[in-house]
Length: 253
Length: 82
Image (tube, rainbow over all chains, first blue to last red; front, side, top):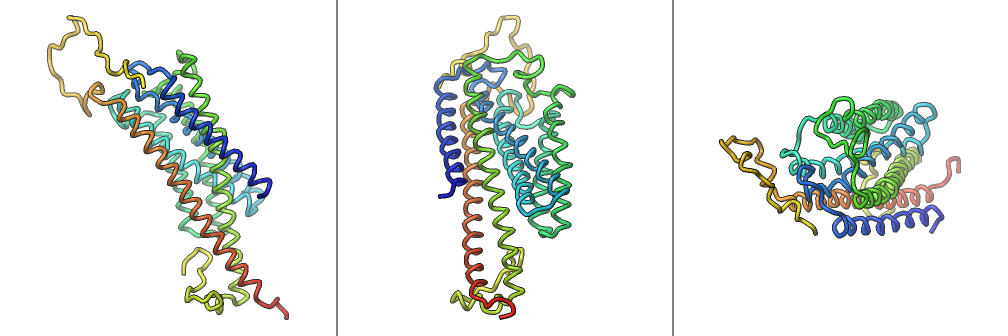
């Protein structure tokens, strides 16, 4: 096991311990909030906010790597830009999976065109668009640059999500920011634990996993190109004892 | 799990009593069961997480296997100019 693997598995183990402790704390120790805040459903908040912050972490990684790629394109940086947009879309889905249930209890509806919800949905759609572009438009230099530019432009929306509540109002709670009334200490504990588990431990783990996948995929594409130029395509299937033809650079057989 | 807050009836004074019935869009929030929403949100969120990790792991394994096979095949070839 390499040093990198050891660090990865250590973070993964810490995440598993932390997430178990957080869930236990939320259900066994944390008091229920007032009914106007959703009552028991308010406990969604302790994971909902940390995964929402996972979008900022992943979107930030996407922004830095995309901008870096536009200046100095390398395979490794492209992999990080791709991982950033993939993970931002994934965390966006988690927020959209959890939020509506809390909203239904607190506001009476699953969805409303609240400024923060609307801007979040826009960001998630942008990150999905980057993913679709990378998946279907090929992996050429021009497509990569376009995806990187979209990654930079798309991340501009992230601060808008955060400040939309103070700028445009809406239904979203303003408990822990601005002139919010705060919350009890017993509610801060699971909130911080959730952030340690999901934002500080889990977000880097999935980012690292996806960047590794993107890098391996690019290495496979290059090896396939090399194999094609050196004539492996003619005998690779037979050498393996199978009929399988060599896939092209995009995995199409 | 403490569900006292959600299960207790709201305090209503005689002045607050209903004098008419008005249809409410999407149903009154009080009629919804908070624990069902809580469980649904957690299940959906963790299901999405497990699926995402599993899909990433499966893809990675597939790419790694393919890469190793291809690298072996390339290594078997004589070097250019041989």
